[in-house]
Image (cartoon, rainbow, N blue to C red):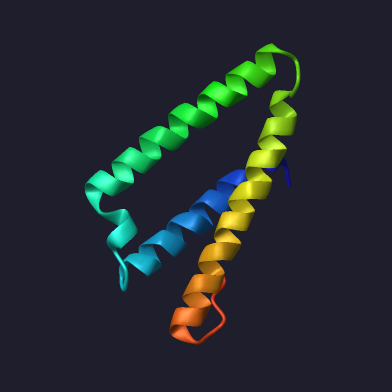
Length: 93
């Protein structure tokens, strides 16, 4: 499986985790809170990636691997939260 495939798979799993958590705690998914967080993260990540790639410090392949690794950690975080909340083993991916 490529790093891009891993990232897409983990994104879908994370999305399922967010949807499940919204059923009992919608605080972090309120429209304004969500939009500000998303916009800030996208701008920050895009700027950092651009600078590092332009300086030749990272390749896009290295970035994609790191992105997939971190998204899988995000999925693990939702699995842990949901498992604790439901007192059951929850697997999203």
